[in-house]
Amino acid sequence: MAKKPVDITHASGITPEVVLKLGELYSAKDLRSVQTKLTSVSGELRKIGQRWTTRSGLLGRLGEHLTADQRQLLLDAAHLIDSVGNNVVHAKEKRQRTEKEAQRRREARDKRAKQLVAAQYPLPAAPNANEDLLEIVKTALIYNRARVLHTFYSPIQFCQKHGPDLGTSGVHFGTKRERNYSDLFFQITYLRSELITAIQEELSYDDGSEVEERLAAMKQRVADQVSQAALTNQEKEVIELWRKALNSFTPPPSSTGSQEGQA
Figure 1 (cartoon, rainbow, N blue to C red):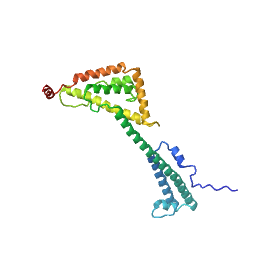
Figure 2 (tube, one colour):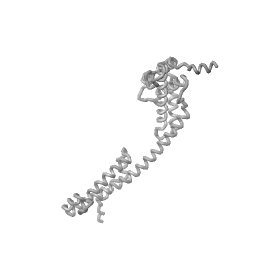
Figure 3 (cartoon, helix red, strand yellow):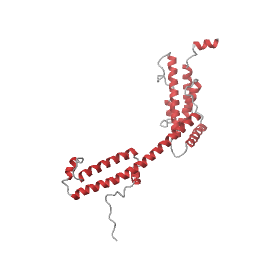
Figure 4 (cartoon, rainbow, N blue to C red):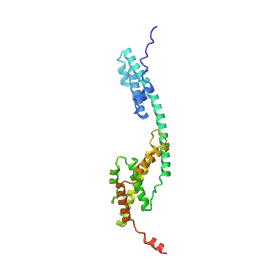
């Protein structure tokens, strides 16, 4: 029995699955770019493989100087490229669906993480007492030790880099005492913002588990660290430095407030 002739214009070895596997690191946008290039090449081959028309331009003129077999070879190549391009299109569409689903899942996890952080970590956005400020510093120190916040710093490095520092981006008016306190306040509230963001990113990271499961795992890591030491010696030193700095520069009650109190 004679073998069925192979259709050389059909890219049977290139399926959408093959494209997705070979292009697993490429986005749908990247695949769309490949699709565009293939379409362009196919179109150019057709211009030179067919007889001249007003649309084929110089390529069509050149094609008239080829033999019929040569022009057919070019047209077959165009069909082959179209076959490859069709599979790239199908792969791109699958990748788009995957990316959209991943985006929906990511947004849902981010939203849930923010909800949990708001409920579980009521760190005051506008702390009005030094103890509130110190609690933020303490929490940040522990969460660095638990490898949640600024994990590129070791606990010792984190302590060294997060002591009180005057001359930061606080207010630039008022008395020197008020400016110094504003610098300290700015440092701590900025640290709070970084801490909240770090916890949210820790919870929303998609490793296949639920956001609530990542919260429980993170809390366990924190509890393990606290069970070893509520605060390390270095952390105690940092807290004490902050306490002294805040107490030194806390603005006194306004004269208006004092008079109202006396009244």
